[in-house]
Amino acid sequence: MSSKLLKLIAKLFTDDVSFQKNDSDRKAAGSVLLLSAFLCVILCSVSTNPWFVSCILAALLLSVSFMKAGQIISVLKPTLIAVAFAALITLPAAFMGSPKTVSTVTMKTAESVMLVAIVSERMGWKGMTRAAASLHLPDLFIMTLDTTVRYLHILGRFAARMAEAVSLRQVGEKNWKTAGTGGILGTTFMKSQRQAQMNAEAMACRCFDGTYKSLYRHHWNMTDMLVLAADAVLVVFFIYLQNAAA
Amino acid sequence: MHIPDNYLSPQTCAVMAAVMVPAWVISVKKVREELPKEKIPMLGVGAAFSFLGMMFNVPLPGGTTGHAVGGTLISMLLGPYAACISVSVALAIQALLFGDGGILAFGANCFNMAFVLPFVGYAVAGLIRKRIQGSKGEMIGAAIGSYVGINAAAFCAAVEFGIQPYLFHDAAGNALYCPYGLNISIPAMMIGHLTIFGLAEVIFTTAVYAFVRRVSPAMIRTEEGGKTSVGLKVLIAVLIAATPLGLLAAGTAWGEWGADEIAETGIGYTPAGMEKGFSFEAILPDYSAAGVPEVAGYILSAVIGVALLIIIFKLLSLIPQKKKAGA
Image 1: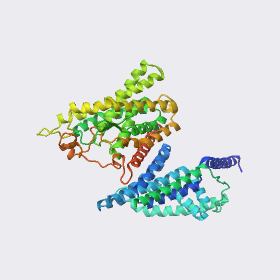
Image 2: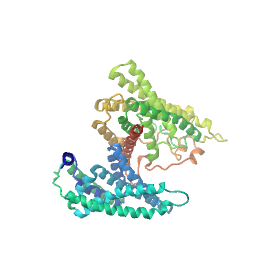
Image 3: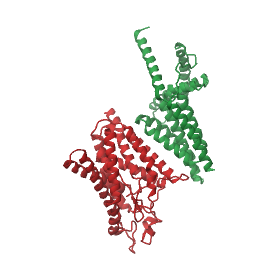
Image 4: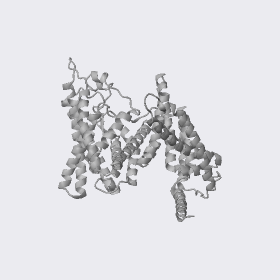
């Protein structure tokens, strides 16, 4: 084994250790954050009180305002796309005499997507996988989720590059874009098969059999307690406002 | 001082907006040249202070209300050009989300509060700082500058209101827009601003400026660094929590009545331009939401406004970075 490779492995190991160390010092456990986000999304979805939904939206906006500019873009981009899509779908309701539905659905969509984007931005993909493992989700489920999201990105980029190449070849009246759709999808599918094979080989090389084992143990800290206390307050607030609305 | 829609004629609104366009262009250019990119998010913090300051309504005997603006404060912290942009964005958020200030009158409101106020305040404060050295000069400059600044802005607003009945009226002589001439608008606006509202601006400016100098000197444009201190964040949180105090002031500010209220102010009719004028439905009109208690709605509006302002300016801080990377 060459010294360069050894150095690389050492660096990866150090990064991983420092990632875990920094994470455990002050931050809340990933599993706690995931569960809190899930709870918040559920409560927002079932809430019939606009006051509750408005408060959550204000809290999320405040949370986003503390982020760095680059992170804010990562959070707002999917949120705005989802909001535009939700508004478009619910727009007929406004013409059918129920304009409130448009604002309610749009606001709830904005909250759910923004919350997920915030959690994803704060935890990172590595943290999400670890949180899912610590919640004792089946390994197969975690791995499927992990690879699906990664391959959506990889294959999406591949398909976009192919579509661009096909459109560049477009000459005259013939619509190469339409004619090439089947070809692009077929090639992308074959590419995915090859990628899956390569992934399996890479897993074997790293002695990874699809079981997520983490030697890292999270020690409960003050932030965990604060997040759980906030969850409790959120549930009480939700019940109080639901009763008030009724 | 937030001029609602239909108080000024569309022609006046167009002229005021046209006046503000070069002011905004020059301000953006100057801020990019003079303010380091790490300080751009500070514009959001400044705008948040201005936004919160405008939520604290102060009552005046007779039923009218007013508020501080904080334009001089931002101009002393970040420069007058930055103040122009900060207050303009704060006014835009107020007009679009909370219906405070008109959409058509946005240019006029920006001229008064985002242009006249910070530039006059900054110039006066600068003159005083030249004569009185040290922190004493700065505090006296902040006090007098903010007082003169808000009164200059109020005077401009009064003139804009006051010229309407002379320029725009029907055949019967009834005003189409603001019905009060200069003989009423100037004293009505200036009495409040020369006394209570001017004092509120002085207290707001000097208190926050002294606090910022002590706990977060990095916010001042001449100082290095670009991080908001914990003390400043706490101050914003305290101001947000205290905003419902603004609800104690009952009544409507002079010149901010609704079309349904103006006939009862003494003129006996509703001007035609107001009756059939432009109407805009804000998402959270008057800093309140349907089904939400008034106090809670006020705090909620403050949180949303402050968060949006900080987000907007953090995103704006990316623009110069991108330009440099491409160059």
